Image (spheres, rainbow, N blue to C red):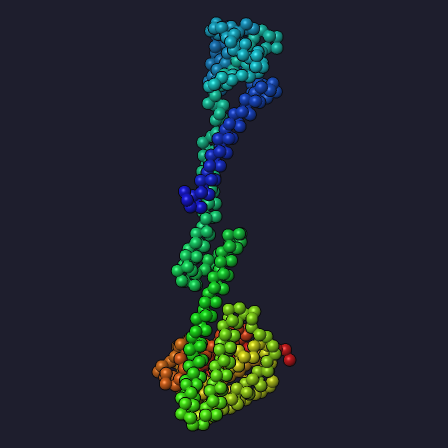
Length: 436
């Protein structure tokens, strides 16, 4: 009985029982109260039986009275007694003065015993008294029929359904909370109810989604730090070793300062991405000229492209502006361009093009490398995913660059997708363009 379901069910069944028993008592009380009224149907019935019993006695004597009273007993399952004004039973000759005295003391119409109810009626001329005796058991349950069992059964079933209806969403919420507490951050109730219990379940779902987003952002921050900071730290270590040798100390110190500034910038950008994912309202919104941003990234990446033996071709068809965070957009585009340079064969070109199509800024970056197997295309934007067969680990990175790019683009309500260009891989980024 400690469960909510059992308590609700017991509570409703108790009230059904109280209603049934209370109806029985009220009905019996109303019956006994109404028969004291001369104009009530029961009182009129007794008056009619009095007149018939008197007529049967006066015309047929005791035999006629006996036949009439037998008929009353057979039809109404009740006993009738006809007495004279002194209380003498005209059928049996017994003294019924006690009944007559009770009737006169408690009113001329009705009085009751512990187990029986008695209606008393005097003739208009006072010569006769008629007593109509009804079983108390019959008075209590006269209203109850076997058909009423179906009503009671329906009430019990409805009580069971209501208890189940109220307790089942609580159980679903309990199971979801237990799963979430065990570490299953995807646990949700997904309730479709429109009442307070449904709103409670949806509140839990929103809370769980918020917690999952925050925890996922923290995990991604650790992964991104290891990915983005590995190369600058390595270069910083080399510069420190060179500075210790004493050769070209100013140049090495400048290199250390440069790498230190880059590390500080990377940490700030990673934290910015993480905060934006945890709370999109923190995302900076300002007009960004994407064509100029891509031009700067292409210029900065040319040195790296030449080191790999390839070159960058930038096709800017028209100025394009989007509303967003310039640092996040820079990080997304830079990761895609550097990824293309990393896998581009020597003496090939990496094509970068920017255009506008139906209110959308479309940026394409294509290399001419080995491409990606078709079945792996949907997964290359997942963290740590790499196609080892064609894009070996020796090429660099640990599979987070495109994942960071996807998250930054999606935070700006954009889309990023990849497809094989034969040869090479083409990555397309689409962002909502600002009004001209």
